[in-house]
Length: 468
Image (tube, rainbow, N blue to C red):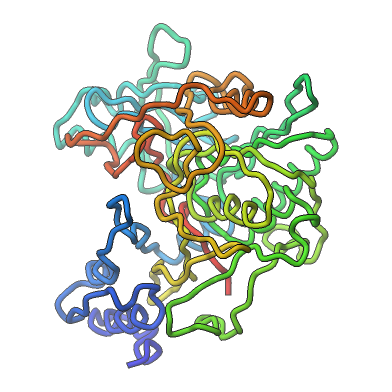
């Protein structure tokens, strides 16, 4: 029966599962690859987990590794205001297994991580959490304590940390209390002086609503500096709203290559060749946005533009979804993209978040292709000199993350490689990435380039989303 027959009838697991079953059959991109199961035999969370394809990509990864849920109230707070419980420190788990290595990748301003007495900064190594040895403890209890302390479930939790700051010879111990942290999606915006003119740099971490105003401010700043090139650092950007990616792509390229061209064409399952099944609107190519879309700036305001014929992007294994769409859309209209870093996550897919009975479900509903019809980067984008198994190759350099320098420091490994490639089109020796082990781990997940570090971002920050 149609999913509408079961929608918003809360309190019955069977009814909620029937809604999930019908909704999946209607909208899931690979609906015909889902094994139909009796909705009476599973709880709702377990049943939803079964409603996806089991197929794999050419490299052997799951084709759908982006299937998740969120409490609707939490999802609305996160996506609209960028508020989430935590410390404001993004941990990079470089080695997940003993001897572990967990470092600070970056911090949020005005957060517990940057408060007086804590003052965490990129490169600080975590040695212990709540008295548990974060480097060597491999017991089930120890790993559980580490995960609970590093990734608090709510605000108001207090945990102790022993860290060794970058450059320090001795460790220090302090406590942090988790709080509702407001994310700052755009940071470290500045021109870098070079012999051939100023080069713009900005760190862009999340495609959330507040990023719209922050990106406009950043582009205005770099435009006033008369930059000749841009280094866009999206190594930790898992994605978010596709319209934000669209705005930024235009602000990089300007109207020259984008006027009248497609930013992205959305493709649903074969049941909907001409109509968006969620909005009911006719499917048409999405143009590049030249005006604001009303996320955090009133809609219809002209966007500034740098009018650059090329862009350098710094990527990591956590560069995903809407961030990859920036790369793909610019390549589709002839803007030269030079990639420095690691292979991206490989997610040309997205969805409309859907609430039912207080839970918001995220199930792949569409894929996106660029102006020349390309969208098959399921194994990610890889710098041109990547060794071994690679995704779609893009000119540039494979360079490991450099936690010994601040983000935006011209000496930081990936930024330095981009600046060097800009002058000579040569790369440093490609980074070698060790395969993961199989011991007990902190936030275990498949990391194809483990030396790059496993980020702990929640699933909503690693996706491509459309608004109704």
